[in-house]
Image (tube, rainbow, N blue to C red; front, side, top):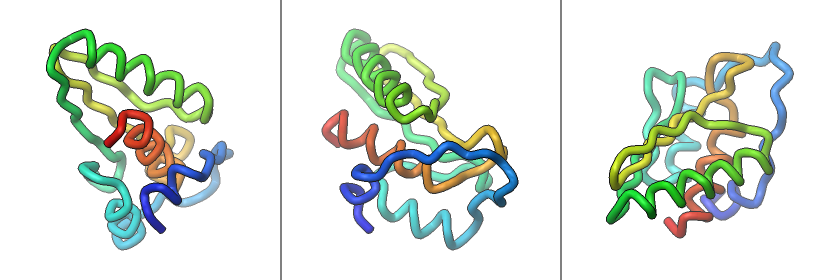
Length: 112
């Protein structure tokens, strides 16, 4: 599956009771999203650089629109010229495929 295939899917609401992804499952999905890394098999993260604050803020707003459409909300950190995105599935306090789908949708929307 490629980034575009992941971006073509929709996030699935997690009702809990499912184990979070681990090890090889995370590695396989990370290969499909560019520049994202897994932190302690708990969340994925990416820092995106911009030439100024205005463009970084516009990216945060676009990511917010995607998050609302998908019903899956990352943590966003805005600074001058950069945005860090951290995402995981809060209901299970770990990663699901939806986190990687959201990552792919963010990359696609920002032209990455």
